[in-house]
Length: 314
Image (cartoon, one colour):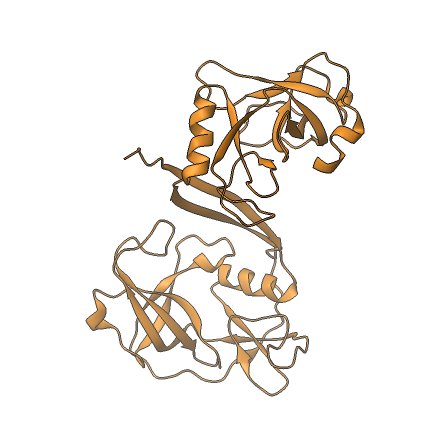
């Protein structure tokens, strides 16, 4: 049985969001150890606050302050916390209806075990020692025996140095295993060859291969070696430097139709000033020592391809 290829894969990027007046006041309030909600026209208090009433779509602006104590409405035990979660030891995920609120806030409850948590138990906010204006300013909830606090009090939402934006890192860790078609493509690249697969119905050659024709929906298994040279069909000029790429900007990223392929793949264009790259430019791969794929493509010196030869691949 052939070896099954697999490799760890991490997809990660920072998600930057600007805040409107309601979310800005809520997060700034957390920094100041103040929990704010928003009141709807029918008198309900929503915590966390939202900009629009989920029932009527009415814009909401009437901020109120609620208590930092509340009641657990439901819960689930988390025996194995993951990276980035509120606590490193086992804890309970809880929905807490803060005193004065009509909706529940999701957060962590620090208790020694599942026997120590129940619906209806009283809890309070444990504030983080250092706060910056984020939901993590609430470190977690903790058990707290107390009577329910009074009604929410109106609040202007005004704070000095308000939080106007947040950056939330998004990350996905998983193990990727290519199928038969992509495994063959990867193995060929190790030999500095590029292979695709031909559809038995429409006879198109797809690179990289997908194991099935996206047009006809039938399985493909006939391997076809393509290239190595190809034609630039479209391209873009990159002016923003990526943190994980040691490439000086500006540079060109292009769709390249390798000779014999009916689908363009993408690659970086080098060996030519960025402002001289053009549609129809003939290019060839450049491999680095030990590289598993072409580092970039460079001009072959051939005349440009006629538009009619690649117009269907744009």
